[in-house]
Length: 266
Image (cartoon, rainbow, N blue to C red):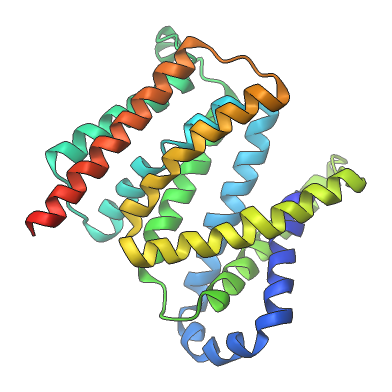
């Protein structure tokens, strides 16, 4: 929880330090939607991060990475529920195939685990994480028209506020781990790259091509995640990982191709 809290508080502080004039200029547009934006930051940043970090206590980095490849499915599901986004047959088949890949990871290639509910607790937490990020991505569609720095700043305010009670609970339980120099180095990397730069690019991508198509590019994450898990920390890659990865990537590719064809016909 120190990582979660410092991560988003760090981004918030950097943006305010260098872009406070822009934030002040956008405040009149943010103020009427303040509760919405704070909640969006809490769900998309804090809930996702907490579920992801705790998931990695109970499951492998390979599983967590491949499960994140199922995010586009939940982005679409959230878009459908919130905005009644339409879907073609090709997209439906692609999303279904991707979802089957997610299930293969969750049951670790043994379907009897689904019947017996023998799903790893960490994988279940990852499902919560990707559902939260799917809702966040779809809900970005209703953000006010403000500069990206102001948007990231107010989302980080919501994320930081949401993380503080969880940080307090962890401290009361005596589970707080203070970072050493290596830990602070990792936190600095996370603040600058995954938390700030990637979020800016992602929000801009949603503006340019929409939540559904932007979410599809997350299919690169399981490829890189699995590769790094094997090469850097020596995790074992099983056949069901390959099967699930193929199902997710093929399904997302089919959905993307079908979505583009629908856009051209319109």
